[in-house]
Image 1 (cartoon, helix red, strand yellow):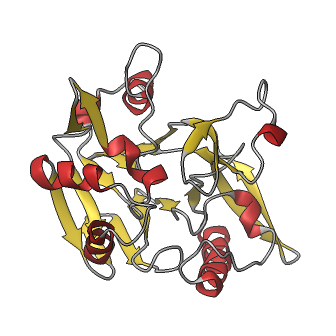
Image 2 (tube, one colour):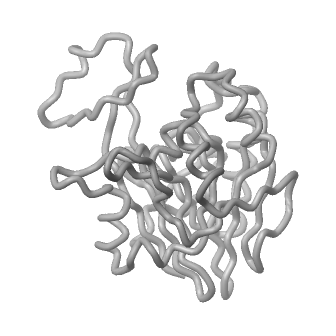
Length: 258
């Protein structure tokens, strides 16, 4: 199993839910009052059977107009067209913007050859238009042109690729555990988004069920430490891939060399 962090950079987001690129070296956080600052790390995992993207970033392009996500996949040594599976924890915009790319004024699937694994309930809610955290044109494009495999509850979508309906961050949020030749790789989406969230217990207002998400973070941390999982942290500032240690009732995350 090969793991690649496809870091898309840092962003500020305010009540308008617009994501604005933020460079800590040149930008001043005080110039963006009321904003949250997040880091975005989609992931690429190569197994014996599949080339897998886990959540898809914001879909920003470089100065030459190339999708950053595509460019980072190429830098990892693969072609975007080789991606066979896209595993989505949920469908908020900062996790789905890279699912589509605009060419000649038209949106197209970024991974037309891949099967997209999405919880049915999350898809239905995204299409309902009840929340501005979702972008309908993305899903309309996927519905029209992409391969989608809807799942419900928990199970195994392919040999060694397990999904679990977790329901903390959004009602139909899911997490993934990939297993191959004794290696276990866990992706917790926005229920274990950064190592720092293992260090303190809190119920976040941005979660669908803040208390459940809080308890899940502790549960995942305990399992990760006990079973030596490699954990993928989507919103990590520094350590996006790491192994969790638990000693003296304290979590610690050791960076994993990718």
